[in-house]
Image 1 (cartoon, helix red, strand yellow):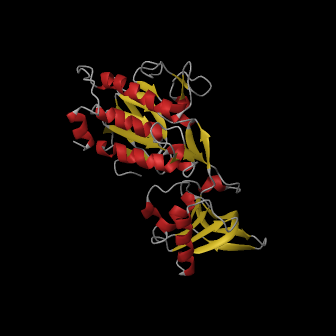
Image 2 (cartoon, one colour):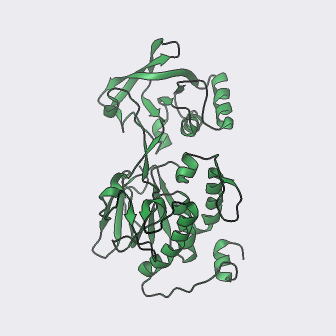
Image 3 (cartoon, helix red, strand yellow):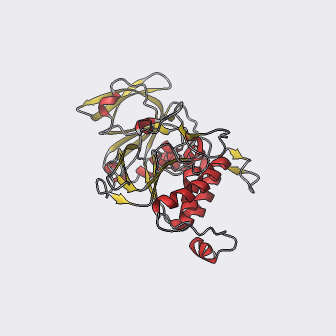
Length: 346
């Protein structure tokens, strides 16, 4: 749980979704001196680009003939760094209510409370949610000794930790939690990984140094009581089974796309998409905007560059909501010394 859990955080704009479109919205809003907080269920910014195709080349970003998904995310991070946006990662937006003063209160499943006059939904096709492994009774352990994301590393200090999976998340947390855990074991159904070669090599070095364990195996059964794991039954590639002591289990079995609680926000959805106007990209609910793949309007194209355009027009409209008594002074970054100063390039 975050240090500010339960304590309302006031800002100008809440962005639900930290993919490329949500990140670029920070830039456009930042040029107008609007501060942003971003909420994303993933444990890192980047959305689909970072999670599903980090090494896949993208060819239709203006001015960049080719860039990988992760490369685009890294450039966006650099571009928006001057604006100091705050991230609330590994958190799902669970409720949205309107306050008496007209502002919106958004609450996450980590008890983070954000208050702002503007909410921007930039959640792509919805939120990524972890796939639950097909293990009988796992629901009874979730949230106590079975976790699908690491929200506080200290919770794993001195524990017997089991991680299952072969992607970047599994390898990253194997490396990050190894120094904290009493013991750490990684299991994967094969001796091959979808993670970066550097991470895999680091993991193998730790195994050689006997600092962690790795087994080609799968988790067959959980043992424990009242939500607390005591051990699991592992099945090896040779079908042999053995009991393994563990009190914290992190399964990383991939992600599915679900609209999740956004569907309950009262946004007049059309086939799980949010209808918006093409002037402001505002939903039918004043103060709530939608940009990127989550929205729909006549002529909509689901392209990253379209989302960037939507973010620019949304920011102009959001300013009028956040600063109703101020007038927008339209400026170009190429010629405005004040904008260049904000970007740190003057």
